[in-house]
Amino acid sequence: MNKTTFLSLITSLFFVVASYAQDVSEETGSLNSGTISSQFDYLNRVSNNYQEYKVVKKANLDKIKSNVLDSLSVFEKELATVQQTVVNQQTKIGELEAQMESIQRDLQTAEQARDSFFFLGIPIHKSSYNAIMWTIVAGLLAAFLFFLYKFSRSHKVISIARQNLAETVEEFEQHRKNTLDRERKLKRELVDALNGKTS
Image 1 (spheres, rainbow, N blue to C red):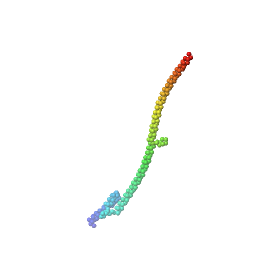
Image 2 (cartoon, rainbow, N blue to C red):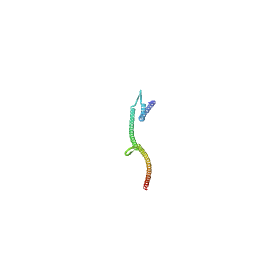
Image 3 (cartoon, rainbow, N blue to C red):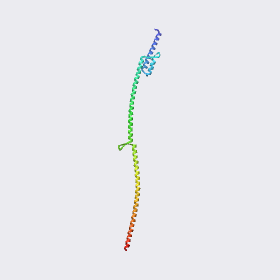
Image 4 (cartoon, rainbow, N blue to C red):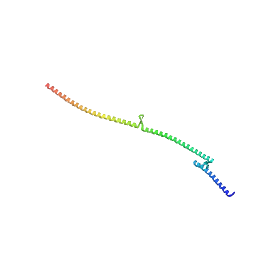
């Protein structure tokens, strides 16, 4: 075997081994790791061309199919987890809304209790109570003023009546004195007249 043939054989063998090692390295590196998009790019790169078609190795096709199915399975699990999380959050939101409605009802009850109370067993709102109390106060004040007016008027009438009574008593006393004086005068005249007849 001559030297040239031997050298070309070794060179060819080196290229074949290097090419095979590169294919194995690329296949194990790209189809076993990376994103699905990068794996499809790798598959497109390593596939042979035949006219306007790509010839894909069956092992590579099976591997990418397995990778896609694995990724879909992972995505389905993640989607199920996300959906469960959404369901849990919706349940919590529903519970929080129910609690908020309960708190709103309690707040309304507390506000009603704060703004109203029971008077003689009847629930009365504070504004109604204030209106009733101010009406009663105004009525009592009006009654007081009315009775004060009546009392003042009665006092004046009594004062005038007392004055009239005093004047009447004075006139009566004067009249009695006048009557007594007249009686005395008449008695004297009568005594004088009787004395004059007897003498």
